[in-house]
Amino acid sequence: MSIRVMLVDDQVLLRTGFRMVLAAQPDMEVVAEAGDGVEALEVLRSTAVDVVLMDVRMPKLDGVEATRRICSQPDAPKVLILTTFDLDEYAFSGLKAGASGFMLKDVPPAELLGAIRSVHSGDAVVAPSTTRRLLDRFSPMLPSSGREPERKELGRLTDREREVMMLVAQGLSNGEIAARLVLSEATVKTHVGRILTKLGLRDRVQVVVLAYETGLVRAGGGAAG
Amino acid sequence: MSIRVMLVDDQVLLRTGFRMVLAAQPDMEVVAEAGDGVEALEVLRSTAVDVVLMDVRMPKLDGVEATRRICSQPDAPKVLILTTFDLDEYAFSGLKAGASGFMLKDVPPAELLGAIRSVHSGDAVVAPSTTRRLLDRFSPMLPSSGREPERKELGRLTDREREVMMLVAQGLSNGEIAARLVLSEATVKTHVGRILTKLGLRDRVQVVVLAYETGLVRAGGGAAG
DNA sequence: CCAAGGATCGACCCCACGGTTGATCCCTGC
DNA sequence: GCAGGGATCAACCGTGGGGTCGATCCTTGG
Image (cartoon, rainbow over all chains, first blue to last red; front, side, top):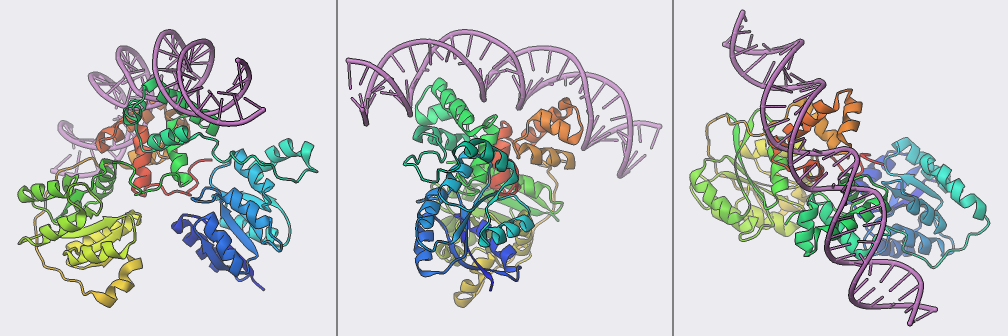
């Protein structure tokens, strides 16, 4: 009996890659795919799935919230959260939402396959790099498993900050962003600084990398204009 | 006998990226560029071009209409349509307009280069995902023309420079790159400076954007963490 | 042999950037 | 009313990054 896997990611290319990897496994099969959280929930209503590979950053309904809704249902499949960046909020909120595992997208395929088998058999899998921080923060409050109403952790950036980030990610300087948004450069600098702090990045260069890696901006997606 | 290529796209960064990729090919050279369809037609009146890489979405005159006008002229160059979206309308109308090929921007560089050579030699090239649907309705039409070689040397990166560029594109600082490559920071700065000059970019931020937009770096490639 | 180009490094200058602090204004919620 | 958060802006300052010039070493090709 092969493991019935569902892929949820807004990046078609990434889904294709995973599908090919999984297709090469004798004990796995990809039975469903979805491009966002809403679509994922719909598909799950009519398809039997054992393990869901869930991306965090998605349009409409992000992976954390989608995970929460999936896991709140009876007979729910196991959810394995996948993301590109090792950001605490993702891991914590994802696991809090009911996910059985949390891994970075850049893990070796073999490791990912092992993770899928682990969660399918009931085990929990967490990326090694986040395990330590997980224990540090969660061990004192381990018995609690209830969810909280707060749901602003994902990219705790404000709208304005995200707007600035988009422009930073397109290669614009602070001055250009100021002109584009009709702001003073000082304001832009404030926003950029806060973005860096909140995301734990060093400089705007890493913002660009992050933006592309998370799909916030996407190659060929009309960056300039 | 290098292939004389013209780039038509409203995104300067993307043009630069393609230029860089093409410049690395011994049998290709970028002899002209344009930011919209009108400009493209103007330039073509005074420049001999073998293959036109044409974006679909552009201001003033879109790629399909520009293609139509180009191909309606005698001795017209081959047109290879590039777009981000895999929509039938683009492919069909583009090919109907006389284009010799149709590809998505996110194809691997090697594939794009192959497509250019194919188109230049008179073949028709279509993105694999649309080929099937296409064969059902259309039969490629393709006139012919030949041209001559020349050398012009536009921003060609050396191996070392390309190596440095890859690291820049992953968000590393000059110091980190120096450590990684076992170099002095001064050397890295020299390389970075030359990269910027050759590619016509302003700073390393734009290098990252360019790298992702051209597929030099792919999202999910484990660039950062 | 010599010329040319690439790779390596140093010194210098300038400035955009990022960090810090502090301020004003507005809106929302208690 | 007040507190809080977001958005806006200013001044300061240290540093990394980019531009420029120059230098040495090596390989390649004529």
